[in-house]
Image (cartoon, rainbow, N blue to C red; front, side, top):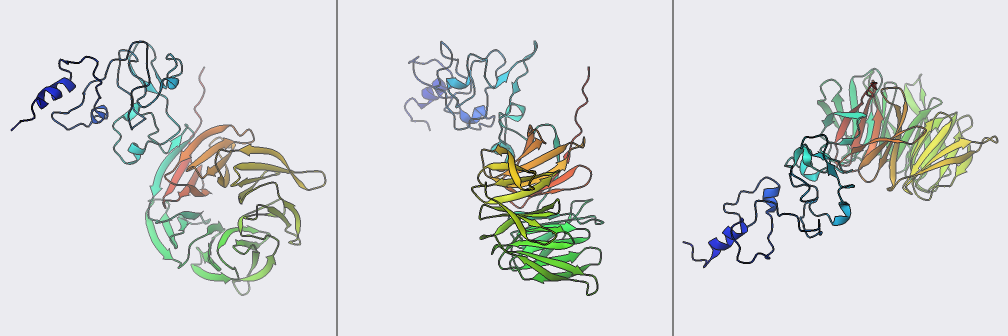
Length: 434
């Protein structure tokens, strides 16, 4: 029973019927704009309001800021929720037309659509944000491996094996079949995985106070003791396994073929805080630390021959490329180092990002050109050509990416804070036509 005393008239007016007050403000149904209004009758308009005289006045509003009114007879309304500064006479707007047709093209924003991630974006190709986990046309997402419940901190592909190993702060290592992408097993370690590398058939996993070593060919396992606290970084060089630890030490083991085990060999002291990154190149060991420094060690005598102090925050990653050393830090800077005539390293170039840098990975694209993958804490990985640092594209994730590993045949892997591991492949560059 309707006893609202004129409610039907108000609803009729809002739906576009005659109005007693032509200057009365009306509101367009938000759900109708999204294509999913199920109210009958709806108290709001199911049509777009005409543009006010003189162009946009910035009065239109909407909580959702990535949709457009689907008009084909002229730009009667701009992006909802945007002011007039984003629509400068039609010259700098984010959509346009081409040819004589009425197809609408949307220039994508550098952000993944939250509604698409949840599986319910109704704007489709008209959505202003990306419906993809990458931007650019250089890489393709092949598959996503799900199972870890915390940050993926290491990825390894031992040679001669058809298995992929991933380690996580959920205290497990997962083994994946490279053909099917199925998880073949879960190894519980009883401690967070701080890092993971492979060398030949060996897989090394850094956990608190120990390093686990698995020979995937001999199906053997051993535990290397000695570290104090979490093991954050590992690298192999000069037949030694190096591990950077929480107490600032770098421990080294050597494999004894007679006893068939790893024996403690050296302990390198110098850093005052945890060692979180290691790399070997040019007969040197380079270590990055939470003490903001990089130390250069001779692999011949394992003595520190130089300390680099140009970074102002944690040195998260170090990488060797040709005769250069690349270092990235939470200070938002990526530095390129080269040796002078005296043999000491000096900064030759500094690349700045808008966000702290987490990890670096170098590889070659499908055309054998060198590319740098640079993960930042804004949940992205930037893809840069080297040495120009021209940006090729971006990879996006729900949370920051802490592990990147190169695979065979143009493949690479990323692991993020949600526990997801994604498999990517470089695409061939399009052939130019005359």
